[in-house]
Image (cartoon, rainbow, N blue to C red; front, side):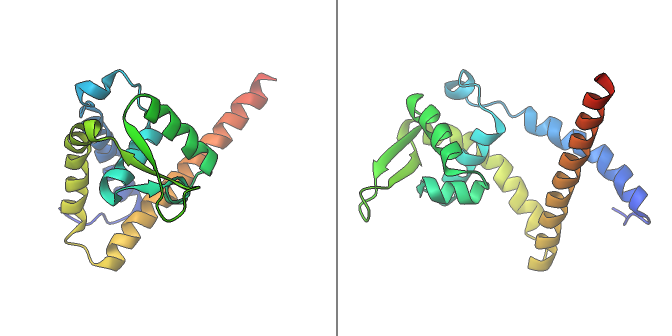
Length: 162
């Protein structure tokens, strides 16, 4: 694989690889047990954290997901009602609840999400810590730029219609 000479060369290469990457991710259907749950990306992020990091509090999940605790509470309530998550009392502080994947769901969620985590490990392992950080920061900047561009497009579309 050669190094792109210009930013435009890199953009061209990424515009070719990103649809393939997203397509492959979308072809990894949820396990039969979870298909009827209509899971969104926010659910997958929460489930991935619990799978990789183990049981967490709502506050810990909110911080790691960069969302408000009330948002996490809503997701947890929804997935708890569906039997995907369980809540238990924190032995150290009975006011807090510890959130975890239910024993009945753990194996199917692990089977579904683990290949993606393993692929990321395989891709990131050869990199030095600074290179991994740069890669992650680049993806975060791309996300921010895409969000900003989308907002500008939405604003322009709205102003053109009025």
